[in-house]
Length: 152
Image 1 (cartoon, rainbow, N blue to C red):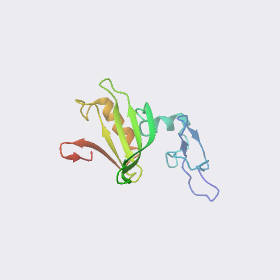
Image 2: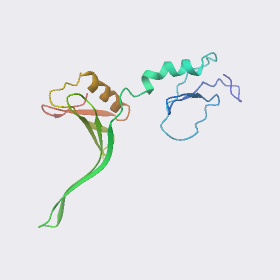
Image 3: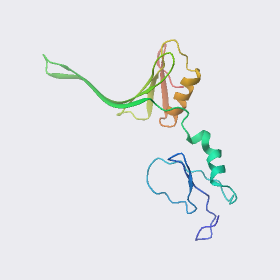
Image 4: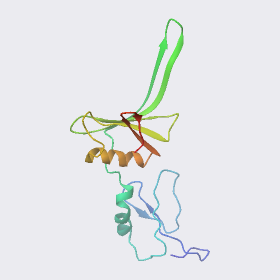
């Protein structure tokens, strides 16, 4: 594909809605989180082929059943002081053994803690999907291990 300046312009696929539209000019309609697949100068690739190429990277393998923005705070009423203040996002994912929780504090938005149900390992297929979902959004995914939070 050749742009107005004569330079090769790659196809871009907008997959924010999971449908995929080819924008031959490579222009973004908004600043929302959209993955753009660059396929170089291959003009014969259809929108459907592009969508299939990137499906494993752009489609979340699982979605949370609940996502909440919460605040927890505690006070010492005798001393009239605040003891703690937590501003966080809490994710909940369905699992046959119980809910998988993830929590990201908004003062440290580069990582998220994950809490699988008791007795469920990190290599459980559903937990692996949750980890993949979280890795698309956070630099570090931190399960609680024997010695505290350990990055995976």
